[in-house]
Length: 195
Image 1: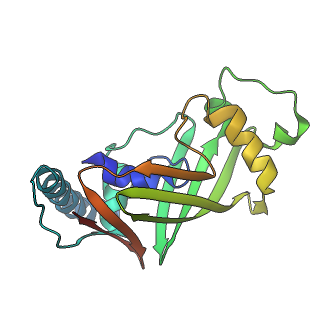
Image 2: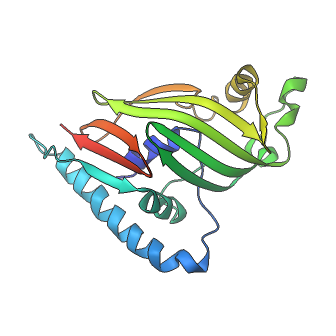
């Protein structure tokens, strides 16, 4: 069930891992098989009248393997992404071609001119799920190591992302799928419970 991992993806607008090194292929294969089993369990468990409430934990390696497998479709222009989980926080390191991401939408606002060309982007977001809802708050974003002021980031989201992805924002709330009640970001993992 991709929706569980879209919880992570929703955190920051986020995007697929495209460059998997050959040294991680075997580990990725095992991690991908593991996460697929867990996702199938969550999907079937969510269909039960009284789901098993035992927690299901996804490791950082499983999440990255799933994203690199093409399991989640991300916006064009996103070249790479790597997630790092810390308690309550997700950090996404990505490389984005903003010209490709913004294709067909122009702006004369000079504050938005920084969002052109290819840049390394780091997004730090607080995230959790409770009561069947997912909550994401983007704490900060930087382009090539330079912090983007929050109001400029909001302008970018409003102009370029919200028209295509209305559920994406700097502060997002959304229903969790498959009777997921809680989602907790831990140290290099995501743990969910169903109810």
